[in-house]
Image 1 (cartoon, rainbow over the protein chains, first blue to last red):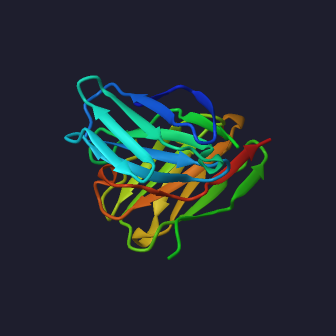
Image 2 (image 1 turned 120 degrees about the vertical axis):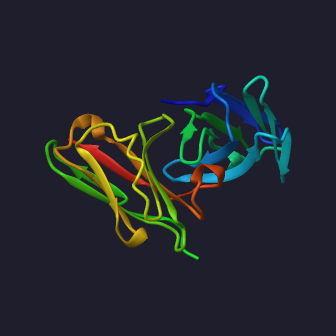
Length: 110
Length: 116
């Protein structure tokens, strides 16, 4: 069963704009990870945020985590056409168990 | 260094046939996962291997699905008597240590399986 649910399902923006994607989950977690998937390829890890962290940055990426609301957001600033992909959140419930959401399909128009 | 390698990249077979999908994880990675991704969907966990421990098979959808990992490295996912609903992309991932869910996973590009 899926744990994380991304919102929106699809997002279309112009190059240079910021993109915000949200993830909600149901049970307590150890950490939350965001991945990107280009069409026809495997997933690429973007960022991991632990349950005791509230915000994390990596280049143009900013991830927040609110454990009280069981939600996370991924912000991509100054988007580029190359950012076009599907973005997934994955929550770690225990040592072995990671659950992925259905993803947000981001389209960045040049 | 090489990433996670999966073969074949595409497989088309007739309903009822058996198929084997192969995954070569990153050298030295002890944890290995198999996932299934249906068109436009998220990932469905299938099975997890960690070192020499018994695998976590809790995600396998039926007894037609099985997997093994030989020598703690290469893994093979076998689907017997394939059905049309088995059509999907099968993704393999590995991570460096145990407790794979606490670390980034490195994915292969998957095997796209089509059952006619």
